[in-house]
Image (cartoon, rainbow, N blue to C red; front, side, top):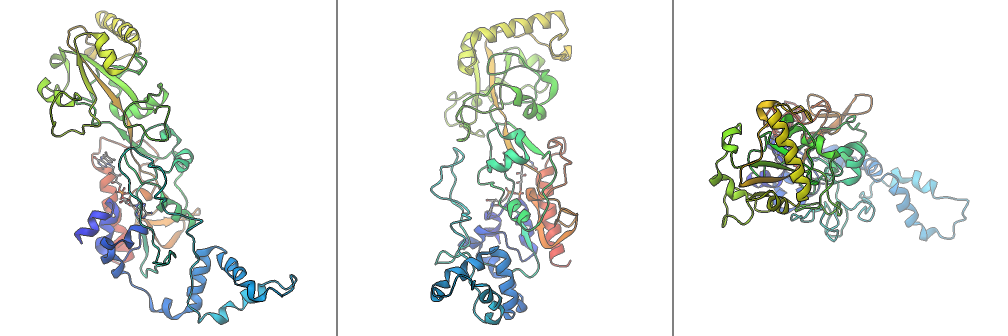
Length: 433
Ligand SMILES: Cc1cc2nc3c(=O)[nH]c(=O)nc-3n(C[C@H](O)[C@H](O)[C@H](O)COP(=O)(O)OP(=O)(O)OC[C@H]3O[C@@H](n4cnc5c(N)ncnc54)[C@H](O)[C@@H]3O)c2cc1C
């Protein structure tokens, strides 16, 4: 069972503990074998070939006809006026023949191993459910199918259609191509209405990400009341200039959204809400610590400099603009009122004492938490709100949970909690428990 947990996602792992499920491709690789063995094939499905033929027909969406046409060479002499229709109609009489599923490998590749990696992080090809002849294999599950394939952030077309707000942002995950959503919609499920809920943050470039220090965009200009909170930076930064920094997705060759810099001076220990001492922060400075522990070295992006000019160069923002912004900010601090953006006076602290600090923030998409409409059992619903029998959509394939709002960070672990919970509920329901 441990192997199953390793290869399945959050929601699927929970669902897998209690039910016979089919999730698609990776179930066919050898690690997943225990699940495949647990699928129960109903006797009727094996005996009733006509029923199986019907299933295959629906699955193939007309491919049976194409197959009949492909078999036509034997009847090449038949006049065009005598189409193959009688042959097709006679098919039930030949139902004793084993059902051959269409080869969909051309039309619907699950993953092209030759395709360019959508992310700069490592991505391996998915394993498709095909037999040794390259034919797709159909599994019939007697108790239900639970889709738990995660979200669709790496499917650009789906993002553009259902969550266009995050199109310009880089994605933290890979291979989240919305396959489960597509399959559910194919089966008649209704996608949750717009807007879809997204989780966006950057906890990795530096510490003190929630501190309302001075924030500047990549042009060195101030752009918001910094007391807004990091939760909302995924909304605010969509109006800022793009930047072509590290960890930018392949589909953002001209730069991505989500970049800004936090600026503070060496007095920060006296005014930060939760100050972090310099000896801890140093490991977030690229190259400052040999083999730093507890950080992702490709994501740390904190800098310390003796002058504003030097800091600007390290952050890659124009030095003159940064200096102008700091001068104005310091002026507002002296006045005691943030006439530009309305930040509370208590958070207005001058940037004046060297060395100066800067963190280049990179907000990316952690998850998109909307899916197809489901009920309290995780059962998929169609456009009329009716249950699609036997189909469950859990985790981020399931929908109508967050109400279309941004992901609520104040309830920690809500996303994972929902995935676990609905995986369990769906499995129980499918098992009749
Ligand atoms: C950096 C980061 C930090 C996060 N922090 C938190 C947090 O603190 N708290 C919180 O609650 N949430 C957090 N989340 C979000 C949370 O991790 C996800 O919402 C949750 O894991 C989604 O679970 P899931 O079961 O829907 O999908 P996943 O866990 O993504 O699992 C889906 C699985 O399906 C597989 N799959 C996809 N397509 C196919 C296919 N066609 N065939 C077979 N398999 C397929 C995938 O490879 C994957 O293994 C964070 C996410 C990130 C990226």
